[in-house]
Image (tube, rainbow, N blue to C red; front, top):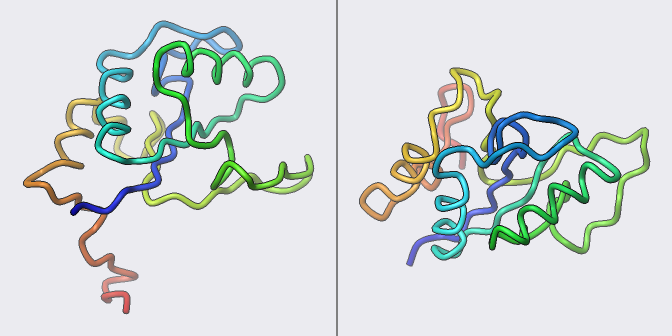
Length: 134
């Protein structure tokens, strides 16, 4: 059985075209891929700079699109909101963002890498400065 991953996904420029503060058009294959990842048992966190009404619009878009997020800007649904002066860094197994180093590979490639031979590359032993983590 494959491990369920906690996947943090950016909204603007990743799930939808960047039209902030409006909600842009869905990026090619984004909704379909996220639905497949959820069907595979992965938990999707909406991870975005948005706040207030713009954040509500993004969350509503995801719900109406059939991809309700596991959590929003939090590591898990029950996590309390952070004060405005505290970082919102969250804990996730994988982060998907259009501003990744090396660029955004596209949703098809993301899904293929996560499902290559039933093994996710994230599940392989991680290295820390060239050494295996123990």
